[in-house]
Figure 1 (cartoon, helix red, strand yellow):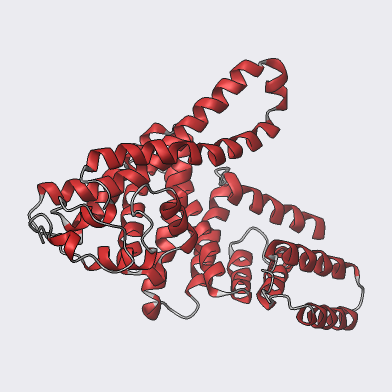
Figure 2: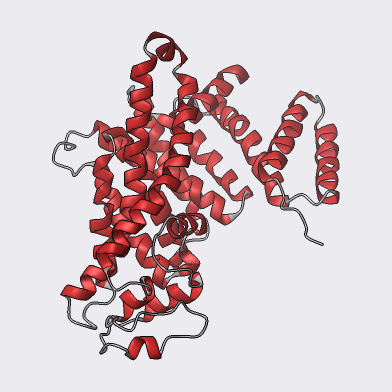
Length: 385
C-alpha cells in the first residue's frame, strides 16, 4: 500500500501554533510537560521530527533575541548569541538560511558601498552560479539541488525520452567523439530511441536521435516548451495581481499589458536559458575538435546560455541572480562539506546578522524578506521590553 507523502507545510504550521500557545503558560514546568506531550503526539501521528525542530527554531529565535537585547542593548551580541539556535534544524535547511542571510548582507553592503559604481551588476552572478550548477548537474549530482534539476529536464526539448540518469552519466563521461555515418546507429545502447544513421557526432545523436539537424531541434524545443512554461509563469504573475487591486480599478488595460509582457519575458528567460545551454552543446561539438576541453565547454554553456537573463526587467534579474547564487553556494558547500567547520552555519549567520544590524543602525537596512524578518524580530523585542 502506498504511503501518502507528509504535508510538511501543514505539520510545521500546526507545531508552530502549538508552541506559540505555550508562551502564555506561566510556569516553566507546565511548558516542559506540554512540549513533551506535543512531541509524543507528533511522533505517534508519524510526523517528521525535523518539522517540530523547525517550529521550535521559529518560535524561540525572536524570544531569545529579545532576551539578549534587554541585557546587551545597542549591540551585535544578541545576534551573535542567538545564532547557535540555527543548529536546532537539519543541515540542509540551516545552510539555506545561513546562505540567504549572508547574500542579503552582501547585497546590502554593496548597495551602501562607495565603490558600487565600479563593481559588476548583481545580475552577472547568475552567469557564474548557473555555470557551476550545470557543471555540478553533470559531474556532482549528489550536490545538485534536485528540484532545480527537475525544472531543467522538464522544460528541455532534448533527450527524446531517454532515462535521465543514463543520459546525465553519458554526458558527464563523453569525450565528444565523431564517427562515420552508420556507426552510432549500429552501436546504440539498448532501450534507447532509434538513432538516425546519418548522425556522426555522438552527443548530437543522444540529445536528438530522431533528426540530424541541431537547428531544427532547437526551434522545436522553443515551440514545444514555450506554451508549457508560459502557463505557470503567467499563473505566478496572476497571483501578484492580488496586490495591485487599486491599479486594476484605475487602469485595468495597463495592468493587463504589464502582466502579459512580464509573463512573456519570464517565459523567454526560462525556455531560452535551458534550451540554449543544450543547443550550445551541439554547437561546440561542431566547432571544437573532438575530445577538447570536455569540462570547460559545459561552463561556457552556462555562461552564454544564461545571458537570456537580459530579457528580464532589472529588478527581476537581480532576484533570479540571487536565487541561483544561493543554490550554487549551498551546492558548493555540500561538495566541500568535509572541510567545513562543525558550526560553520551558525558562524555565517552570526557574522551576516551582525552586518545587517550595523547597516540598520545607520538607516541602511536590508530590503525584501530579510528586512521583513528583521522587522518582525525587532517588533517582538519591543513587545517584550
